Length: 158
Image (tube, rainbow, N blue to C red; front, side, top):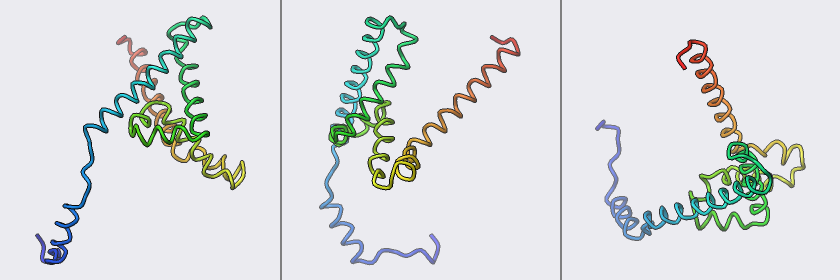
């Protein structure tokens, strides 16, 4: 340790011990189980939507993926607009943030938050505040994978 680093005073040590005694312990295992179950429910709903697209609209398993994702994002945005998704997110934690529905929630939450500033400067400029980085890195990653695949095909490896 350097001479400049400060050691806590006895009062600070006593306060830190007091704080540790009063701090609520988080139920990590319970939170993980809830997140897993709620995320699984979201995925089950997505699978049901995909099966509806396959059986009622004659999509294939490959082509039903895009409208399923769009529907899930739309439902998350709709539920966020009515204030339901926020309650689900409080209960589920990461179980509601990790699936694609979390993306829809992030986009629409910024829109709702800034709607009083108008459509252009409020909603339009803040819509992708959080989700913009997800889109950016998703597009960049897709570009890199496509570039690597193209190079491998041109070299005749595959």
